[in-house]
Length: 149
Image (cartoon, rainbow, N blue to C red; front, side, top):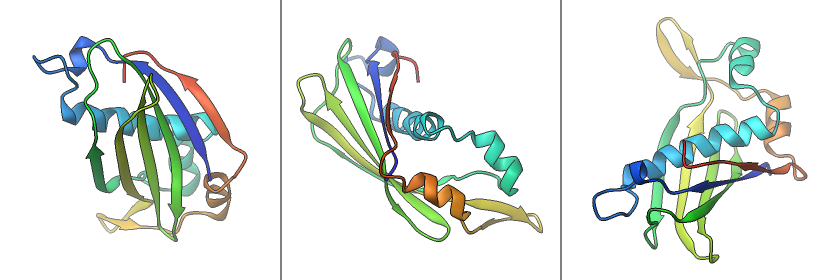
């Protein structure tokens, strides 16, 4: 399955007054990591929208297991992978790893390939060539990131 890794430094703006990452910011990190997963695989979201007449692939479900906090100034990596691909949806797994190798957070998200018809948003089958890219076994890449999302 498709994999990517992104590294970043926890910035003050990510943190609450105690200097630990404010939990909603993790979901921003993970959304950016999903976008990065597609980017490093050479998949352009805007091109997909035009080519397949879709609105996108919004997140419809997410969960996170917060194991240990991340603090201002720490360097972390986010390992992102496609965990499962269905007919109209796919599941992503994110692992936020601290510099010492500890797993800080495990997050899962489900995204649905959607189109709009009759003013309604509806699921649409994921095209075979996109499924092939998402399920590619030899497609792991690393992208460097800063504290920015």
